[in-house]
Image (cartoon, rainbow, N blue to C red; front, top):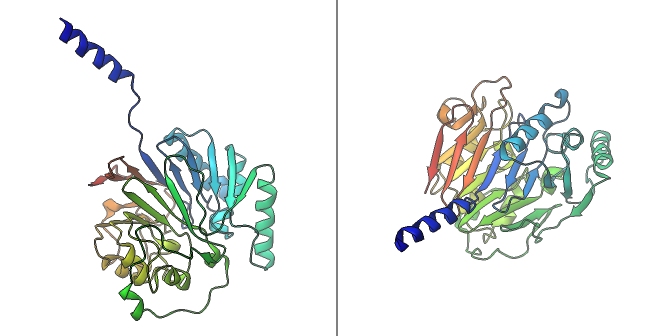
Length: 334
């Protein structure tokens, strides 16, 4: 009787214990911009960028829908990677819909055109009632339970390799540099997020030369499990020297039907050591059938606007699963 009673008590206690939390990423379809919602195992949330303005608040509504799906009622941190329309333009509309704890960016706008200044002014007016955190390369983000390292910000890069990195990169010898990019793309905030054995990298729209400087002649980053393809899969970013040194198992491309997904990008990804799959928010018209992955891995297969999303869920053991909301196709990576 005592043994049975002990088992019963154990079962009751187990039923009261909360289920183990996962680290979740929601890649929201904002038609070739970025809006990535991250929910940590501790229940904190960080939204990376807000997509485009206009379209009757389309992107803000889609982010809000993703937040409801994740059970998030308040965004703890809004991280704005850089001041281009497809990343920061949707901020005012989103802030009208959801509460935010603090806004993270790299400081003032670095472009001088009238359009750039107007875009930044609208952003400043929208965030002036929120706490603002300016970050630089080498900083860590204040997310509990995960390690988030800023590796690039405002054109500056981390001076020293991250722990475990620092090996000589033989791929650097064959890479050609491109013309210097003086736009906000080269000022993008890039970060690596780690939880246990799992590593994820998001370099936003960081461009070719800056990426080379991160991994040449020695890689400062190490390897990752999941790589958010830089610059929506455009061939202005993503040289072999960085992609192949990251050795991602899975690449996720936040492209649009007519934006990103360059054939060169696909070819570099497919030749990367250890790559298992490429997932995309859209079928890339530029890539063609010979480069796009099978439809099961594409959230939006038609050129028109469906708004389907991808979800990445990571277990504490390091096992992770990617899910396609269009067809509920899921694949787990052990």
